[in-house]
Length: 344
Image (spheres, rainbow, N blue to C red):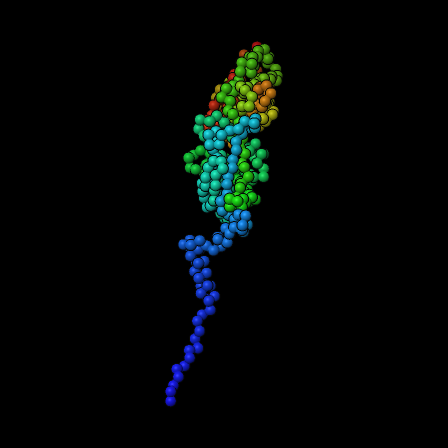
């Protein structure tokens, strides 16, 4: 009797098993970066006549082009050169400050963890006679800038303006596959290195005020030498050469940009042979008062000071006004004048 072998009942695996296994391997290799991930290819797929589609994420992810322009704050028809007159460096904050790029029309990489937020570090390089007009920058970029700090993030012990930028709504250019951030507009004020108290702004000495209580006004003024220039004032002091607080008191002082400041707002210090009143506006370029001379402004900035006097017949009071200013590099300089006031 012949015997027949049994027919095998085993069949090959369906083709889609192998396809699925291959896809899984591809995804694993794409995830670790060995091969392009399939989801990246899908995102970059271009339909005929179209461009890549933006990532389907809550915030921009990918390449973003950053644009910045600079102008004279008092004449916006005059541009300033980014990279020469003013520096702009683009940053992200990812558990620390990360420099991305610098300058105009440059690309940066933005991650989802940035949550649509980048930073512009702005400063005037050494040798350039400009102030950063922080307030005008904030006013003219209200839709882009959400806040700022004046801090040192580079470790060079120099503070810079760090503007927080909301780029979460930046449009996506399908033709280039990049996001386009709104242009950051910067404004600079030209430093007046000739700011001074001119001869006309120095009141004449006063005599014959008598020995009764009397009020006298000293009409000091300083000048900005030309239109479209400015000076950063951070402190003013008034000093008199007596330690007797009953003889002289400060009633008020006019300070440019602040108006009439009551004498009670000043800090009074008494020394062996003098009294000093101090009004501190700020302690750096960010908090100083940026006083500017616009077009058609006469250029006089008054520090009119009112004193109450109660002198003895032999008294001669030397009252000295000192104005403290910052140069663009943050160095401090002063201008001062003295008026003598005598009872007889």
